[in-house]
Image 1 (cartoon, rainbow, N blue to C red):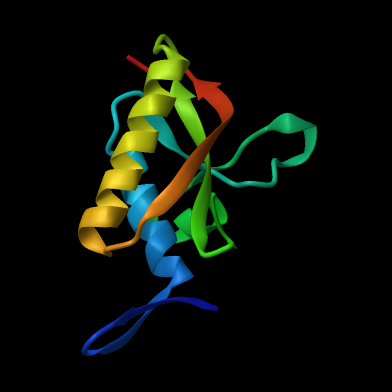
Image 2: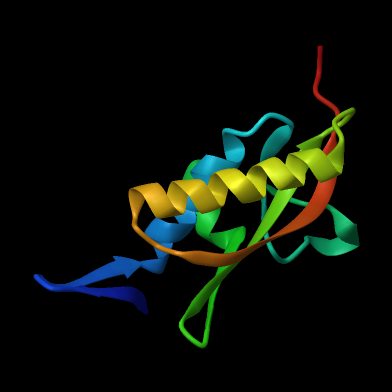
Length: 120
């Protein structure tokens, strides 16, 4: 299923995978993010770190009454303030989707799936 935008010149269909890749790329550029996690945690609560080609597994796109809502599952770095990291991810993802794809995002919900200690 694709997101459809209509303009005076015609219609544009944007794949959900493209939206999730742009959102995931914007999120991983933020300070304090180790990576994206799968929305379904592995057994025993262990989160899997996703690679760039699998960002769509860590991003859920929902359309409710023509409003776009995005749920993101992330893993943060140890020692960072989680609320600040989540806020930065929300603002950057919303900005990138508006600038790159012309999509208006109603909400970006962040779910922290884990905390990782980076090796020295």
